Amino acid sequence: MAQINWGDYSHSFQDETLKSSSSIGIITAIKAFNDRYWDDADGEVRLAHFAKDTAFLNARPKEFLIRSTFDTSKVHIFLHGVSRQNAGNFEFSISEYKGKVLVPFTSISKFTDKALEQQAVMPQMGYLGGILPEMGQTLIVDVRRKGSSKILETVAIKRRVLQPYVQRVQTAGNTKTFISLTLPRKSKLTLKLSSTFQSLIFQMENHPAAGTEYRLSRNGKIMINWKRNDAAKNLVVLNDLKKGSYNLAVRYPIQPENMTSVDFEMEPVWYETNVFRILAGLLLAGCGGAFLFLMLYLRQKKQAEQAQLNKTKAQLELKSIYAQLNPHFIFNAISSIQGLINKQDIVGANQYLTDFAQLMREAIINTDKDLISLHEELRTLNTYLKLEQLRFNFKYEIKVDESIDTYITEVPTLLLQPLVENAVKHGVSGLDTCGQIGINFTKTDNDMLVTVQDNGNGFSEKPASTGYGLKLTRERISLLNTLSNDQNISLEIKTQAEPGTTIEIKFSNWFL
Amino acid sequence: MSISAILIDDEVHNLENLRQLVKTHCPEITVLGTASHVDNALVLIQQLHPTIVFLDIQMPDKNGFELLKSFPEPNFEVIFVTAHDQYAIQAMRFSAIDYLLKPINALELQQATQRAIVKTSAEITE
Image (cartoon, rainbow over all chains, first blue to last red):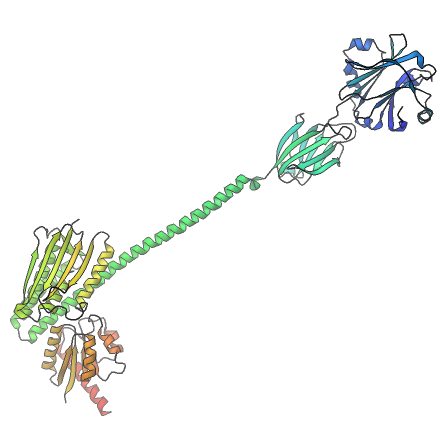
């Protein structure tokens, strides 16, 4: 037989076995560390195992040994009271409970040697063999006298599954968020825990024997490899758990093949979650967008304000041009009257003064109007030309296209006056009765074309140097154009129409 | 003693009117010439060396002040003649004898020319 060290084993037998050296009785030797895994309920479990099997029980002694084993070492069966001398009287069998016979009734042929007998302080014993039931299997060893069917001794050895059960999990370190969960009895569990719980305590089923060992992996990587529980035999304490997917495996060292595994997820706290990060990102992007939008909006608003400001400025400038235009005309007219008086032309001076008064009246009435009817403008021009006619004796003609309604059509107040004034001063003033001025209003589609024509010497010098009045008129036209989007006024001096000068003013889209 | 003058105004009939007024009210003044443009006036002054320049301010292209800038140390007296009164302060900077508003007041014209004559005489005496 294999050499065994008696002291490493735990021995079981019934009380009466050792009554005398000749008492017949089975002694089992199971590796001692199995003892540590036998729970309190072991005995009951053993009885319950056969409780209803009366046929089995009736065939056997009322009391017999029932033992559990957990590991893979063999259980050695000795028969006390049987030596080489009396072995011929006995035989034994080994069979699977409710199963096949592994060893039919056989004579005992092995015995303990002196060495073992000394170790054990035992007389020579029969050795029935070392047996190892399959997991969950129960093996029955029966001993009888040869020729008798009555079983003298029986031992039942069961190899039991020993698997730890994670009963509870609770958080540690943060009493405010303390949780304690009782877990269902299931080999695989999935928990979801916030990573605010950085320490977790797993509690095993209260097992009376040696503690479990555990292995912790995070995201598939082993963090702690099989380690005996530190804190207590039935507690696994895990600290500093970062977010991630964990697997905690626990097992009894004696039965490493049967482990219990708990999967748990340390969920990121709200500010660690991707959802939060995305939301934060979106919020940030939103804020950025809003800021950008605000900037653009403010810029556009500023531009609009600037445009409005420009418009207001243009209007103010127009007003200032009126202010320049009126005195310009007035003082020139008065100068003309002075000229007549100095020439001793009293009748002329009187006539001039009367017409001037009328012109002033019209100008004062229209002074605040941006636009006046063409009818009024024509009347003013007529008065003005009459006034100048007295000084220079020229002829003039104002022609208006019949398709133009002079009462409805409006023109910028006194826009034409300086041009007519130029025709007088620079055109016909030196020609006396040969001087001719023609003013024509024609309509082409939606445009109104006005020509002021004289038969004077033309602008012999630079066309631009045709007096202050023309410069003012150009400025005023450009300002009027900035104020209007669809209507446009353009001024052109045509010098090719010699003799004389023709000024064309085109009022585009004027009849729309 | 004869005082020479040139008249500068962009409007011909103003020139005529002024010439008439000067002739009537300031017989001691001889009008050497007239100009209706600053560029012409510049040449005229350089050629004729007038004692007094009657100068309109608002003229197309270049105004009266721009003409005076061509003469940093003028050897003539300036009398501005203008229809506008907004240039008076600017005119003072050019040490003008006077600033006459159109239509021209004959008395003011006489006073202005007298001042010019007195000033010129004083400078000659010195």
